[in-house]
Length: 89
Image (cartoon, rainbow, N blue to C red; front, side, top):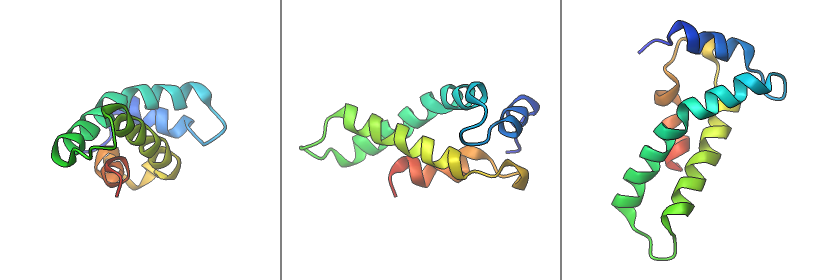
């Protein structure tokens, strides 16, 4: 799936540490997706020492790390790129 025009504009404006608005917009755009990935990991693993909030938090950290490394100019779908990191490789 290719990036839509709005998303591509956000990625073009986003550079780590440069455009806070684009960073926040991208983070909020993908946060629900990251939580759904965390939910699937939580349901599959159910580690007794970890609460749901731990999984959700780890997914958000993975999302931020993937955002920093993503290169939109390659035309790759961001969720496809970020899923291993958000899942917690």
